Length: 293
Image 1 (cartoon, rainbow, N blue to C red):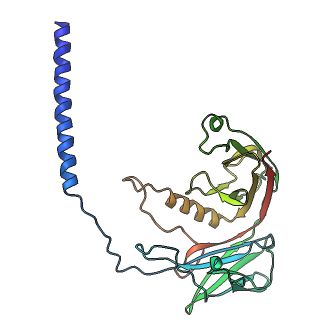
Image 2: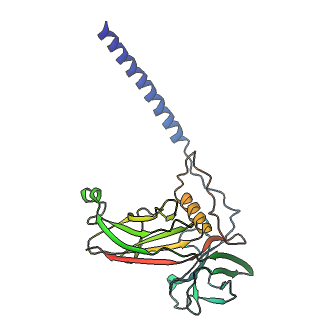
Image 3: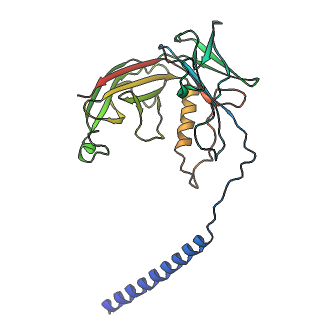
């Protein structure tokens, strides 16, 4: 009897499985027959101005990029704005004019640099003014100090050594520094491999506050892998709380999978006025470099 009941149960399970499978096939055929290409109605699309600005305490790191959003169905690069009036003022009343693409490089269309080179100063507050077609867009940010990186080191990533995604890229970068815990700080990190900005995945943004970072940052592993002979560089930016919020919003937007439980996509919060997208960032910058030998 025991064996018979088991056989009956197995037979019933097979019958139920066959029935469920048949339903799934029918449902799949139904939805395939109902499949239709949908083109979104974007007739009400309105272009917005996008402004990306950076002022730091290092030379040759100051720029403002001005573009427009493109129609969803338009291929290619976003439209560049080449006739904007761009200036930056500090809280002492100094005015720094920016000029558009003085080198004439086609890749630099829409990019403005200081007419006279300058560097930002820790503790100063800077305001960006961008005028486009008679409309003025402004943003203000403060230049906070950044901790100094003590050193960079590297070690073999054992998992990558066993099964590397890219042949030879088996070295992880290790960061050593001291983070002051008696004040609130926010940071943005950029990792370079042979002078090329690099990421673990394309949607990554590397930012942090000091609640996440310990006071003694001893060998924190970077996200980018290197090969022997590579030149590694890390740029560590101080950012304001507003900058931290912007990058957090942007990261959430880039990594939104569009699932049922995902939040509705929205533009990152910005310090720019008048409906402009983007962010004006003012930062102290520390740079550390090493060779992977």
